Length: 113
Image (cartoon, rainbow, N blue to C red; front, side, top):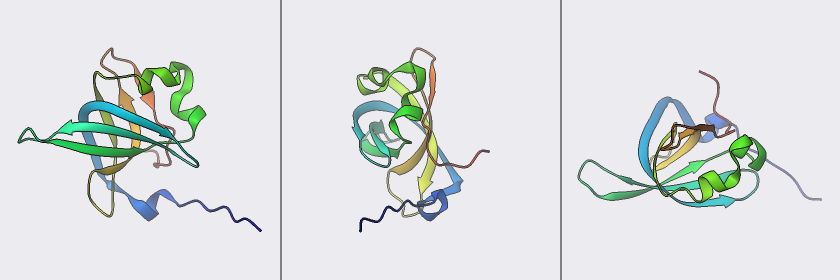
């Protein structure tokens, strides 16, 4: 018999480690149970770091803005979330502020603050 499982936010991410980065969206993968957004971010030395943000399910992630807004976005956007406990450039996404000022909420599993 198939078994479905889902992790709690606190199992992988740290609410005490918020992150804000600016970068360029490179890819969006629609996979269950979460979508993953890939973002190229320049660090203080000018090196490009490939970040990965876990998002919510398709419907809450896109909301009324539509999936094309994020999928085709190549402008520098601001991404907020909470870092992974394991370290590295991985986070649970909270919100995305597009270059035109619109803000999208990820629909992720992060607790309200």
